[in-house]
Image 1: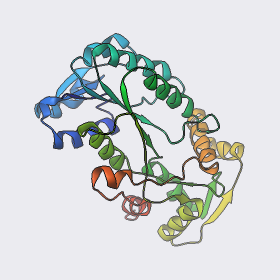
Image 2 (image 1 turned 135 degrees about the horizontal axis):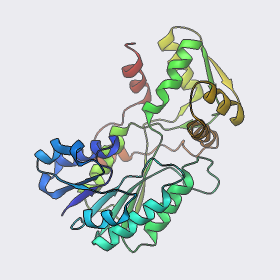
Image 3 (image 1 turned 90 degrees about the vertical axis):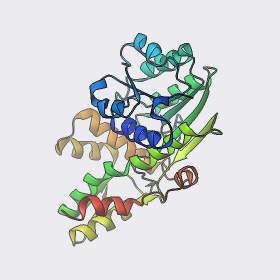
Image 4 (image 1 turned 60 degrees about the vertical axis):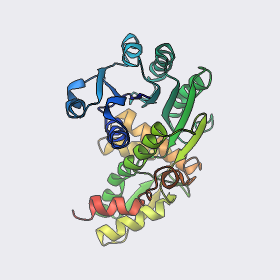
Length: 287
């Protein structure tokens, strides 16, 4: 069986590739990327590295030829990636891929305000209607993306948030990649939806407590509405799309779309999922 990974030179794709290469013969791994030179070290280990570009759908079917099980890593062009994903699903079918594993988002439902939902919901629908076997990996928010907010709160004594009483089960990229590798290298996950989360749902109060520990000062949680948060993020230097995206994830947290905790990491990989506090202390504690 040949396993393929798209976006294999990106952080998630490469991390997953490293896990997969520990499990199977490298000659049975195909890594698709726009920049093959970035994967020269993995090619030297025996992996097949092929050029593929989501902006050039014709390149995808050729790159995926001979692949049996494919990890389709969602691209980073939020709001403009659905057609590219649909083209990738069509290319996978044309190339004879049997099973597509897709990196999605928790609860891609119409009421979920996260700006990424439409892209992921549309891709999931395309897979369900493709005739291919599929697995949806609904990865929670990455833990490392929350470090800036905790660090700023530790420095200022204020955690400005639109999370309300909501919580998110932040998960590390490495834990998500380990789950993806397990699904790619084992049978039995066809046509399943897997929520991939950290070991606990984290609230704003939890974030503030960590900031207080790191800054050795009191940290106040300042609840604001979405418009106010977006303005504060822009004032802090984020561009408009990034500010709106972060704000939308806060609204999704507030709405309860990210608080489900699963045992997927431990069950599928045998590894203990990394607690969010450990991520923060390792990244920021020595600063």
